[in-house]
Length: 228
Image (cartoon, rainbow, N blue to C red; front, side, top):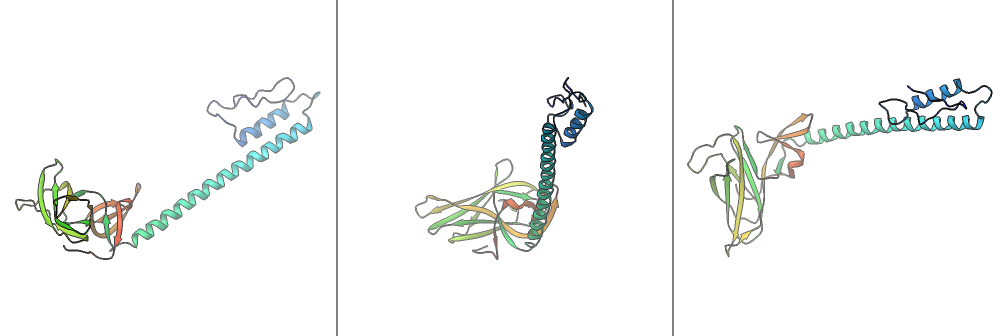
């Protein structure tokens, strides 16, 4: 540490305290005060009022430092508590049926996946097109057109009757009214939560053998509606 004491015996607090520090900590502040007392001119001692003022500054600095430490500990404790509560709540969802957002399908050895969609009244026909990772159509499913929520199981069989290879796929639900106009559709996947996995990057839910984050869940449902 470099201590800059001027001719009057007072310490220059603008001095370079450390090459790696841009602000004074309470320990640095105390060391400066001690150095100031050691190096003061006996014939011209530091004014008592000035010294009392510096002591008050040190006391305030220490209180602020302690408060910051307390707040950090409090935030860390609250974060751990929140994580523990969230993990417990997610574990209680095992066995619940959920809707999962997105149009992606991951085939990884499981037997099937449930595709879902919501449609309004007056829909004449619904088709579900399934594409591989290269955008090639591998399967078209004629789907139910009942108003509300509908679910269709895809057993990973393509249009030629063969099981598709494991990998990434996407699906698209197309609905048309009686005027052959396309109708807006909300699509998702559905399945029961089979397990919960805790990782460093967050908690994952295992659904149909695939891992999803809790943010992918759109809705928790009691049981499937519509046709399957």
